[in-house]
Amino acid sequence: QQLGHSEKGDFITVKAAITYIRNQQNGGNEPWYVSDPETKYKCVEQSDGTWYCERLSKTVEKPMRRYILPCTIADSTGSRMITLFNDQAQEVVGYSADELYEMGEGGDSDKVGKIFKEAVFKSYLWTLKVKQETYNDENRIKVVGQGMSSYDFAEESKRLIAGINAY
Image (cartoon, rainbow, N blue to C red):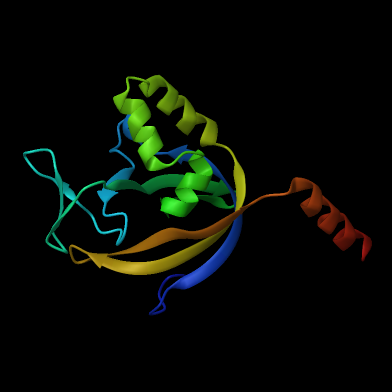
């Protein structure tokens, strides 16, 4: 359907379930980055243990972690890897990135793994942005979660029954 080929990208809404969340428990990287809480810009750790925002050239006293959560969603037509950023990822996982980091650092990595496992196979109504990007001279379609809402199966069933009865 040529989704994602428009200049600003295309927005679609799908009903899908999360089938996989990539994280450090299953061989992926940590699903967050350290940022300046005011600007959300990435910070890097200095050799003395402080955090520095290169973009603003300043030391950040109390940085916060923000999600970049790669996951796979699936519906009846197939599956697709998407990226969820902080707000959507926090809703899916149920914890802030800082809270999960503290759990892992406190030696409770089993609980962190359990939290990610419990987030899988939940269904949502997703608003996705589909956009073509060029990386290393290669075109690829990138899908990013822009919004999501809980899926109410009872309401959807009533809507489908009403549609059937209309015939």
